[in-house]
Amino acid sequence: MKEAILLVHFTDRIRRNQLIKALLPLRLPLKEIPQEDYGKCIGYLAGIKELGSDETRSAKGELSGELLVMAGLSNQRMDQVLRSIRKSGISIPYKAVLTPSNQSWNVWELFEEIKKEHEKMSGGGE
Image (cartoon, rainbow, N blue to C red; front, side, top):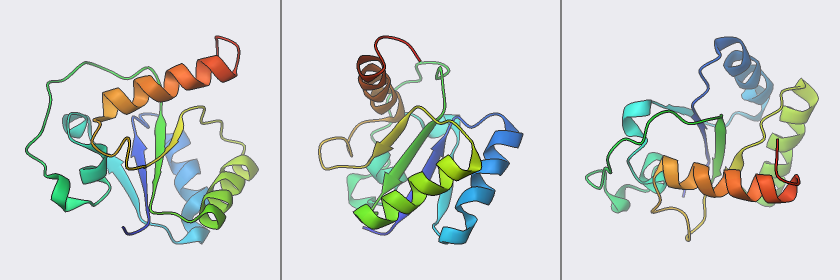
């Protein structure tokens, strides 16, 4: 799988542009996922075409936060991404890595799982 960073629900243009600027030196493909694609498999959105785009599930409304998904990155590249985000001063609580377990989930399913994990790790709140 090719390297990619998926940006989901980055509605604040200033924050989105700060993030893009922070990640630019890494020369990673950044893909903004439009809301109409939230029902598609996250793996398909990351470029795994064999998962197919026809499995779109119905819309579940707005997400309650931004989600950054790292796909096809080595541990070293993930560290570079996280370091660049931290240096920029942008806080993105919901970050995920595309895995064989979650690649068939849609955006809402992945977001809800990451949100639950974040709440457990942070003691119940952001």
